Image (cartoon, rainbow, N blue to C red; front, top):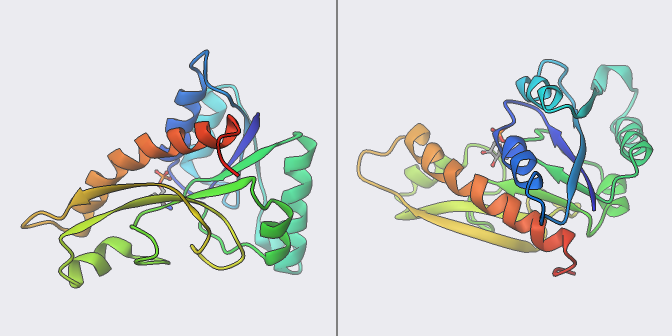
Length: 190
Ligand code: GRF
């Protein structure tokens, strides 16, 4: 399966997916990486792997719908089968998510349905949560609402800060995102 990754930032989950796809028996190849931020550090990493990249700025478009249509056009030029959101910090229109339904997945740093949206680690700490984690899920029109594919759980430890908790969870993100993409690309999910 041909996979594109969309990012906005450093791209560590992107890197985990790129590395996984280098295994001979992995059922997907990364064909390129797109961003809504030209300055996203992950774009340089993608280029260093020899991958095609693009960036689109909202300021080039008169509406969110026009931006998302251009995004779909870029992805279709690459004949993409599956789109992975990896720190893509942008709400997508229903038109986009429905167009890619069943072929669009995201990684979110919480045990969904807990803590949709931003600042998940600080919110879990403020609640005194004893466990926290991450989720790979299908993307549907509602923010962080689609069906779960895989989750990983970590303990919240005494003295944790949002940063220490994020780092513990990131290790798990880098493990379950390639595993979830493998399941989807191999046809094990519907
Ligand atoms: C990750 O924590 C991911 O779960 C969230 O945004 C962060 C992206 O990090 N959606 P990176 O760009 O993959 O390093």
